[in-house]
Image 1 (cartoon, rainbow, N blue to C red):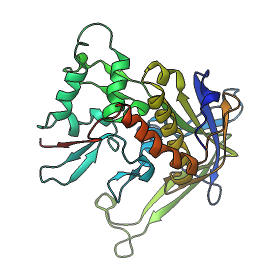
Image 2 (cartoon, one colour):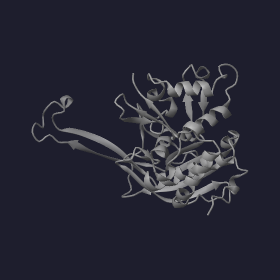
Image 3 (cartoon, one colour):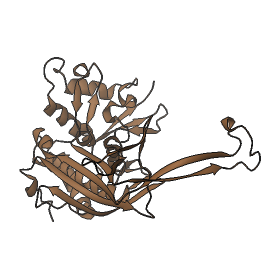
Image 4 (cartoon, rainbow, N blue to C red):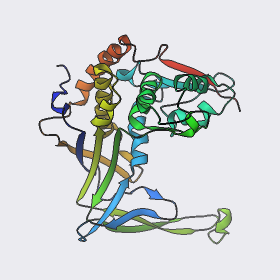
Amino acid sequence: MALNLAPLSHSPRLLMEADLQPIQGSRFQPTGFPDLGAAEYPAPDGDGRMLLVESAQSMANRLEAVCWDDAAEDWVGPLQGLPYIRVRDANGAFLTTSVLEAHRLNSPYILEGRDTTVLEMLKAELAGMEQGRVDIRKLAETLVRVDTNAALHGVFLAKKELAGGRLRLPRALSAFIEAEDVQVAPSGGVKVDTVDPKGDPSKGFGNVPYARDEYVAPRITAYFNLDLAQIRAFRLGEEAERLLIALALFKIRRFLETGLRLRTACDLECRALRVTRPEGFEVPELDSLEEELPGLIDAAGQQGVLNEPRVTEVTYRK
């Protein structure tokens, strides 16, 4: 069955929520922040406590990670043919890619090495923006062609050679996970040294007790926001729009099925995914999206929307 996106045609956003729960037991460990720890805060109505289980920044990385096959060092099967930047080291061995790098095309391994292939390409593609307004449409068109993933997750090309460091594309797909009515589940343990229990802990010897805070909550919810208005504003044509929307939905479905082991002590499962806006749209199942995507990638390629060759190779040397 062809992907039916008609219910989305007049909606500025596609909003989704997924009900999550620990896959075993009731405790889970949230993300932590330097000098802060867990992000716990009052509920909007002042009744109870909320907890940020996973931040928008981390979720972007996780939605990318489920699309990558580490063993094959390439896209998972249904996404074969999507453009990206592959980086090799000075010996020709695989180093990283724009999909794996936290800053995507703005990775220092892509833009700061001796190989200036991508930098020169971007300078040529995005010339004329040194002064005046940045042409977001042109930036989006370039990203879709050379690194389609970045058009969904955003990029900030901070190099002064590129429009004075002003090339910024916000996320079209964003997500986060919150827990409601949380309570702390305190615990702890001891690192046991059976050889020298009274040794110097600063050097790794001795018994070392430690405290640990986990949480319990009646509700854990993952929120997903796909900015349809932003994608339409790129004005890339129907084939590119369908590809970007299907790719976003694939990322969400695959994350909920395969990517919910967030940490050793935070292994979750999805009970239900629902669309809260607009009415009348249901997210296709993962297998349907897997069937659709190869055809959408081929169609976009035939329209000249995607780069040829699809993989841009660069070599990183300091």
